[in-house]
Length: 586
Figure 1 (cartoon, helix red, strand yellow):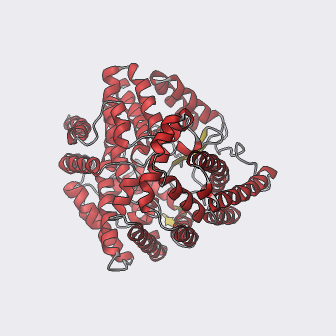
Figure 2 (cartoon, rainbow, N blue to C red):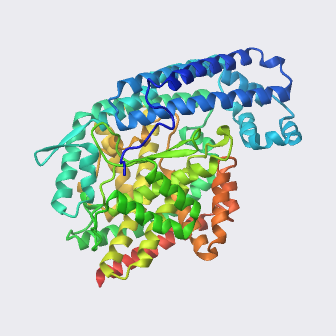
Figure 3 (cartoon, one colour):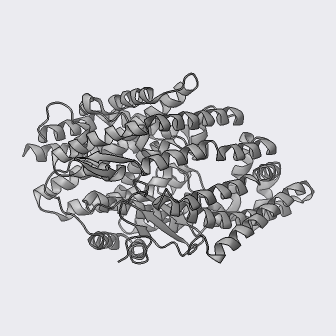
């Protein structure tokens, strides 16, 4: 089996004649958009809509193919300067039609009988959600010239700062026990069975951030200031307001979610103190032991074993999911192992032109890495569902983005718990699940609090690295309470988590809590309804790119604005915490 991904579904390399041909075709498409925008007012409404959709699909197809290839190349080698240069060229090309795009969207928004035109033409029905939201979002558009200027400035603004932070952290080396490791490698040691390894790795990790903290602080301050300025110019009440509107999610849903999370924090603090006691600590758990394995499930998995493990579980759920996962392993759709220059963490990237996905992981063989594969392949399955739409209507919003991925996690872990009769293995599996749950509740809440405080403070101060560490520690103390040892927290989580460094996507934290609890609610329905639920689940995933978050959930009979729904998922975790504590007492 090959352990690096194959990108030839896009291009062989940058010298591929098809790449040059598509770059030229993109120039022609951008020129066509600009020409169309110049005479858009002369078009009859229906012809305007049809031409707009046709040209938008043409541009999106080319941009997706070119940019995805370039981005995937960079993610496995951040020192690839050729890829970085081409990414810059693509940004410039796109910025050259920003004014035209803004003008065309305003023209679409000005069509008074838009709904009537859509009703009269079945071919436009698929684009109803897209077109009506163009009309709704028009209030936040700037003038054509301002949109063009903003797009150009962003290339050397937030986008450049984000690239710099990614380069610094992906190439950062740290000295661990006399050996030079990448940041990803030393962070992976947090899962080691040896407590001294975890402690030394934690200390080595914290020490290495000193090399880049000031540069990354400049990146974070600059990006957040750009977001604040953009929100003010566009008329959003705040960065969170912009995020919720772009997420197609009601504030009532977020409030219900966060309120339920806060109410249940003491249960997670109880879990952390119980784990600390089991590991021989007094009081709260040291940060370095957050991911300490417990029980007897210390098995290391090869990639092949991980594949067989996941296929066995997914076969019981749905043949379509099973077959997609098998193809992902066998057709080189996954890049598995860490290496210098490769970005840390894991992600999925849908490739619409091929109706496939590519998955990046930093696989180390632990059970948690198998779960990570399941998570990312859940994203791939979500991609597969929305690939049936036009390329213009495949983007699902941020909150539901973590639903299929987390559902896969629940499937894997619940199946593993149900199959084992060994007490030590059961303890290990339950604790592994609680580790993940604590991340999506306590850690995600701390990230939400931190980002909120960064936005609040950025309007009046430049936050240097020490100040950012202070804000991070405050957020962690609030979220983790007495569950952690306050003298051993992680002040540099703002450096290593890339979610804060996007000019266009703020608050990429609460969607993980949303996805985790939403997935548990969906899993409960699956347990109650059996195989009949699978089609409903897939129908819901299909709908996520063409309706609001709350409407998609209603397909499965769920009201997301009700706090009681979120409490049901949290209560199931509270019961697992009680079971975990009782197993430790035994």
